[in-house]
Image 1 (cartoon, helix red, strand yellow):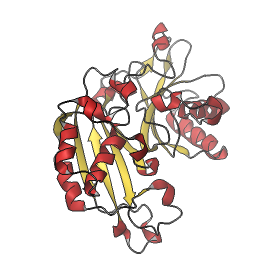
Image 2 (image 1 turned 135 degrees about the vertical axis):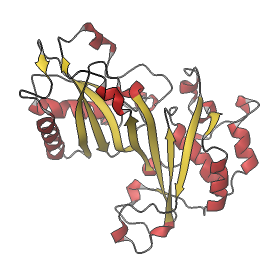
Image 3 (image 1 turned 90 degrees about the horizontal axis):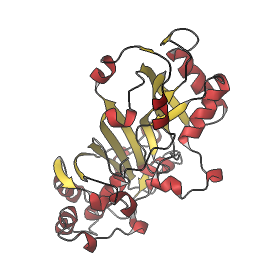
Length: 310
């Protein structure tokens, strides 16, 4: 039995990412571990296997990430009947997350076929990067936005976006070296939209125009690509990088001449995975029941093989 869950959370780490490899297990809250422990609290007889669809870097927030949860069921069992159904599952999982003071919630869930793969089946992913340019930021908004100390020119930002928006570009320079060597094809088409209002809690602020946000959409982002690309866009908008220099980074003649300064990457506070989209036909073309769990489950470990993609 496989259930697809839609998750929102704040600042957790995910097993199976490059950044998670360098974090001590004792000091890290892994999303998969939190879900497993919560499920075992109300469903102890069915140890779950969890596979996340989008493996963001550590501490990226999520408005909607997805994951599949597998249960081993003996014999044939009709999905959605008996003691395991979606409303019961969702209610109890959220109840445990609330009781354990976790900043994570299940916003939706549905049964899917055992062959449904959440990472490969996704047709689109969207990141949202929220920025504040006013130092008088509320205590609530501070950990959910990236504060920019240097003024930003929105016309310059729009010009930089035009060099990227809906164009096929090799983004191999916009990921970490460890991911780069694993990639077979780093060409991606990214759509970027600029919104001049980024206030999450408008009632707490009299002037919401001091912020803006960037929305980046792609089928499959390279690891850390959204943050690195946005960093360069903001540098152009702040006058630290010319449009010509930015374009040369997008289409370099020699990849070794452009190296990212890790210390200059934007603060991760304002970065959210906004959504993961699937084709509804991928759900409809599968049957709604499962049989004995097969050996194929051994192909889906908790942390998949690193591919250089999120």
